[in-house]
Image (tube, rainbow, N blue to C red; front, side, top):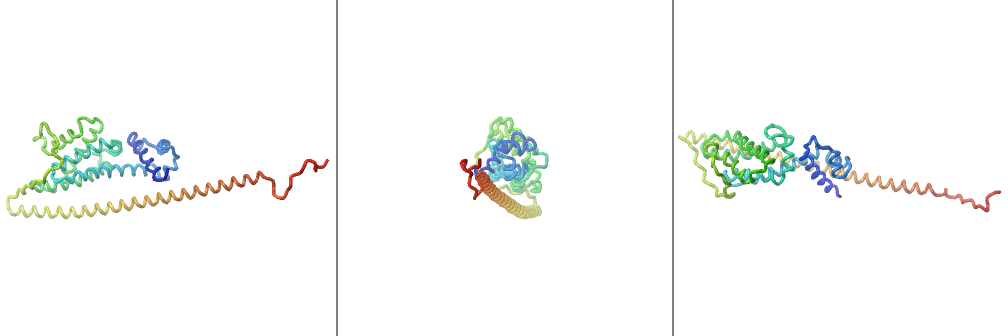
Length: 299
């Protein structure tokens, strides 16, 4: 098994163990025993349990974040909300182990940890959707961040509940989620259902401005939001570049460690061959000394 194949094997095994027992309940000894390797092999690839846990969590976070980001690319706000809810439930259904890992050691409402970080990242994207919707309806766009946290938190906690019960079905749960988020308690539809996933974009409603001053204020708010979005996008790009550089550096260090291990293995094999050859030489007679014949031995 090559070094990269062994690395992927250890990641798969650790993912299952972390999902079943959590970070604290899983040991390097158990990971190594399940993979039928020695503990030093695990340390060689990841530096310890923390290293392999970080890789597993990072992969799951990127997978779920990618699904949510794709869902939010829909044209209509309602379709975005529906697709995002479906994407989360789909991830829970198809990648249950990964979702358990993210929520086991960090509750969504705790404010710390990996899952809370993921929720904040998703909320920052939903914030943009809500800001546009608020501006179109004449509401204060500055309230969008708060509403984004409320909305994403509701969906995330519902996902944690559905992880265990799995009833009703994915689309029905998503429909009820969207029903509450979109219509509110006073306007609940008694029999909600998911609409078509592709809808034509609707014309935004004009801001409810009563006079010229309010319209100017609204324009100023929109300009402020656009500037803030540019800054946020720049920060996200810089953070992504830093993460990519870090991953490349870790990959380089792992490759160097693998090469060093291979060199050490070759040296050990060479020393073993030399030791074996020396042992064979010691078993033979010293050179230049002829063996004594029985007939020539003195009486």
